[in-house]
Amino acid sequence: MDQIGVVTPKSPWGHVAPAAPACSLTDVMSEQLANQLTEEDNTFPTLTDPAADLLLSDEVSETTSDQVLAKMLQLQFDREFDDQLRREEKRFNGDSKVSISFENYRMVHPYEDSDSSEDEVDWQDTKHDPYKADKPQNTPRRGFSGKGKNITTKHDAETCGRKNTARMDNFAPGVHIGDGLGMDLKLSNQVYNSLKQHCYNEQRRSARLHEKKEHSTAEQAVDPRTRLLMYKMVNAGVLENINGCISTGKESVVFHADGGSLEEQPVPSEVVLKVFKTTLNEFKNRDRYIKDDYRFIDRFSKLNPRKVIRLWAEKEMHNLTRMRKAQIPCPEVVLLKKHILVMSFIGKDHIPAPKLKDAKLGSEEMKSAFYQVLHMMQQMYQECNLVHADLSEYNMLWHEGKVWLIDVSQSIEPRHPHALEFLFRDCRNVSTFFQKRGVSEAMTVYELFNAVSGMNIPIPPDEAEAEFISEIMAYEKRNEDHVQRRGKKMFHVTSEDCGPPLIPDSDD
Image (cartoon, rainbow, N blue to C red; front, side, top):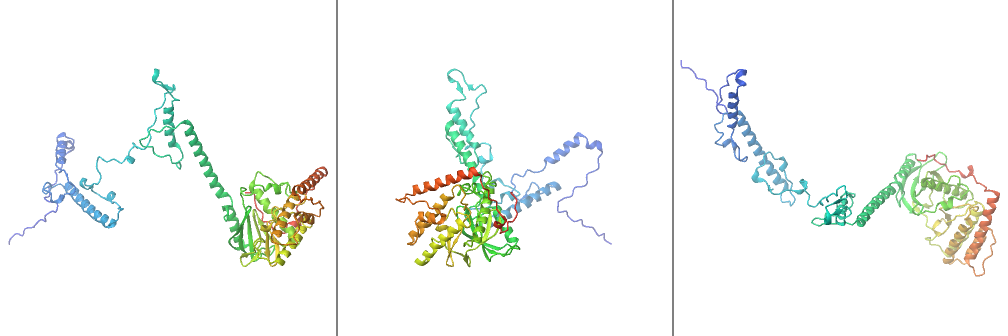
């Protein structure tokens, strides 16, 4: 029987070398063995062209080293991966003028595919920036350099100019100072100091504007604190929702809202939120109306503007309460929260009542409006013990055939040192408006003042306003001296003036 031979499969790695014979520690440590291993490592072929087909190379076709074969396979795999990546890059960019490079994802970077030259150097990646001004040479500590005629002190104009130019790099990032490439710039001390001061002022102004935006009530907008108070009113059920701004003025912003409910009293279906502005830039003379008001003189503090605004809102609440008790047509106060005053809405279906200056009235209606205003002024002065102090056609509304008074935050008592002056100004505004509208029954400013105040100050023959005002100021002076001699009669807010609820708040 013929012997059947066993065929040994051929290894894909080529001829398999026999296992190395075991060697002792002495052989491993011998210098001759070390030299032999070094010579074997040097036999690894040099791959000068990474793009070449390594598996077909004649240099490695007969190799028997597993390490060399593994490296060749890895390089071949990297080459195929780079080819695929190049095709993906071309398909991704298409015909676009702006292309996206996949260069950072490549495994092999052949020198022939590089678009950049070795001679090209990006100055942004180096420490040598041609746009950066050279540092001026520092003056020695002794304050001068050189000798004799060539001596240069630290006060030299050119040296100081170059130093000032270099110092401009320390300006704030938002200041554009330019590059000055190729120019030997020299800034004098005067110019440099002016630029430095200007940059400092701009930084402070920017900071103030940012703070003002965050902490003040602007036109048709509110600051975060005020917005939070409004949200709390909605969450508490006092308001259903806030619809938007309906009016703006120098002292406040007025928003329309749908009323909710309160335990103490019913809330109208339509209300307004009068948000007093927390900045005094537009109405800087508030203290003129409140510091001499005996109801609030002990609580007035000019050092804290926010507290002044809250006091201003509380003052309007008390004035409106007095007017409502005298049955003068005016908004009804719902509640007060810090500098937000919630009042009834004068209008219908989200449409506010027009101001008296915008109302389209006939001659009879205008005549009726004059007598209504006259009666309300007399009631305020004699029954409510108040002077409006800012009465004009802009602060009177026409609704349901009646004149309604609004904006009484600046209203004062007749005992105020300037009460009669403010009353005369109100009379002038009212008389001028109705006379221009052709109301023949409209009184002159002098007659209206005497009718409201109950005084009988003689009218000057030529109706000289200066003489009439001088008589008013003289009367105020005599009254003030009398009060000082007898002592000021302090007016304390009684419980009758505190009908609307005040939500307790802190001074934060």
